[in-house]
Image 1 (cartoon, rainbow, N blue to C red):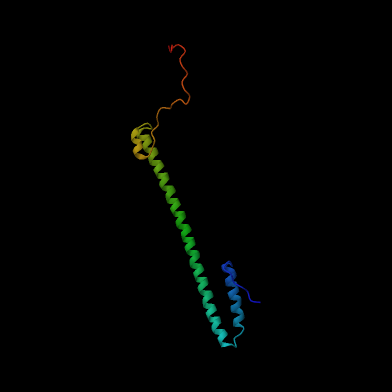
Image 2: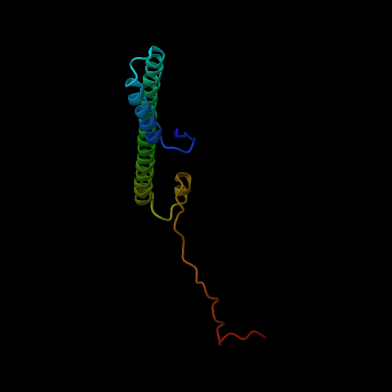
Length: 124
């Protein structure tokens, strides 16, 4: 019974199946037509392996590029934070010019509760 190949099979399963078939075809050296097929199958397996290697290299390069991008983003954020902290120290943490640099100046803290009415003051 011949093996069926499906789209859901893994790369390694397909290559193993093709190599197994190639080994069996080589045993039939007496048939020149089979030898021709074996050569075509050998080329197909080689091409598959080369393309898979290229695919893995691109995937790895893509992940490396993503890691480098994230690292550069983190470095940029860190540097911006250091600059803003320096400006806060130079200009003062309440200086309104900090807004130009994306820093909210500190202000007076407001009481979160309503002030109690003074009992000495007469409302009427």
